Image 1 (tube, rainbow, N blue to C red):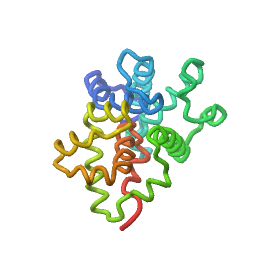
Image 2: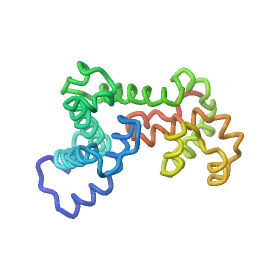
Image 3: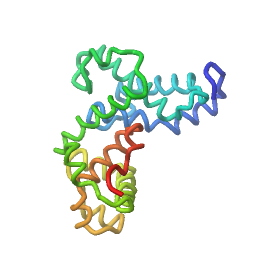
Length: 212
């Protein structure tokens, strides 16, 4: 896909449907609540996604989802800055957000700040994650796959966001895993679930940190 090239209407609509979840994930992590199509964030995000589709250039070596996520995040932040009633949603101070020439490194820093803010709602710190992270790669990968499966279940995530607790019994029955295992790695699982739920595309590349 090259910039400024016309896109077939059918392909355009298909891309909107395929990547629409980015809008809900990014808006949700900025607001700390579920977003619906009736919210302002959805309209802003939809325009940003359309902008991304029209301007994406694969020759620059950046995946479309990451590119679109950056634009959606920036447009939502612009929206929050311009509307005082929404300014509590800003993840960083306004002076930092006013920089328009954000690059990948800054986008990752922004994600980290947003992620840290979200983790605090669950009483989890980065220092704790290092301690509770499984030491063996195979164990980490199994838990990451479990977390991804949980994140894809809207009811599980809705309950987690509302109660700040994992529904241990339901998860155990659904994924055929012992409750003791879920409880042992509860904070690690919650942290990974939030990465997938919040569509932290930059941080997803670092899943599986620590250990051999």
